[in-house]
Image (tube, rainbow, N blue to C red; front, side):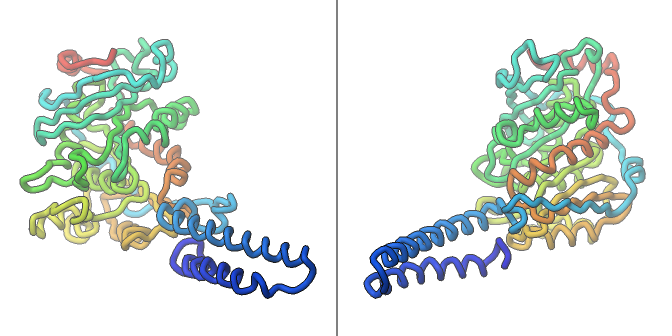
Length: 406
């Protein structure tokens, strides 16, 4: 019997009802010595308690998918499978036309404080995390974020160098604090660079909910929040002026709703993003509910936010994606089956790398395990060709007008 799903819940629910009834019925009908009767009664009470606790635990696990199999529950983690669909990596990258120059300074990213993730004496060895406020010129939205600057950013040898950057998004509802305190992207990035498995990159970490409490699904809503524009155009433009970010060499990653957003932004903006990672994401905007009316009855807008529809009706974009999913994940048709349908539709010049967790779930534990692999992959994509090159005189002059970190 599977650890997830209705059958186990039903069995435990029935047991949670029947065991107390049996206990009450047999309480004064037990035979044998006094010690035997008391031992049996105590055993029945303990079984009743254990069944109730197990039912609560299974219900919580069904909701949070902390463990998706019995082997995972007992610490037996199966090796994930990795498959590639679509174009070869070289073909996908050579078809991109990245933004190579720094545009006008319209959207802004203002440093609002030091998060204290590291002391000033540690910046050139471990990097720094600063709090910022992003003000979008095109979307008219504003949102807070945290920016991780790698130690190389503060070293004299890299003083005039621009770095690739990664946009990191939470799910919904989600706090950007989880990206540092729970998943610890800065430390994961630092460890990979020290191990020689990734290049130094700048990380911009924020909630995918840029118009709270509404879940905009990273969509430009007619007459409403222009979330897609903010997350793609405004954010990257602002970061490239506030920090030494290399235009056109962005990566983007997110989990759950953030995973959908990462895949969507990568497919819709190949000139900005060199690669995107979706951790247990889905493939079309979840209209209604907390999202409200995203499309105002427009089927064209709805189709534009459906990544499978786009692959079926448009030429595949020249982008690279890395998507992960647990085999047991299946929430409203947005889990394993939807992911397999998506990757099987991929055609050249697009490339998708698929990682299937045999007993992983929709949770931080699984994503933590996947993080080193996907960040190394993002580093390879974002550092391809001219990434992290020395700033030209014009780029330095433009960036000097913006707020620089202390």
